[in-house]
Length: 207
Image (tube, rainbow, N blue to C red; front, side, top):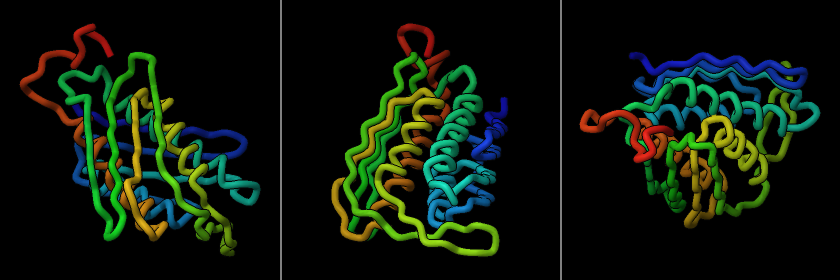
């Protein structure tokens, strides 16, 4: 059975559309109003081997918060739907990934027992990036709290436990890139099918 999902989250503040294939080859089409995060989602799909189509619109003239958080909610829901009954999945995934001088350690566990959890041990200063509004480009700042909002929203909707530890690094771009690449690898490993397993990977018989 194909592990795919389509999710459209539309509110008065944002409109997020996602198509996801867990068993893809890393292809992606990203139409996102924040070019830097568009690049991060492309890396996530590439290194997680997920086929991902993502289109987002939002009121970034007000704040980055709405579109970033709603993207996390929509992507998390897509993963939950694509995983279905979680039969024969590995459940756990872990990645330690370098990006030049930066080193990110990400631990991910798929667990929909009603106990989603997120730990974010990351420190970096605000980073100046660009967001697009129509044909204009305005300067906006992206800080750690915005990334926290994305991952917390994802964890809530996907129903997983996720720990992200940034071991070290100097360049903010490299730090964030290491995190998203490691996140993709860890999620791919957690979502992978293990033919040796029977049913769901839990002694409770449910996830």
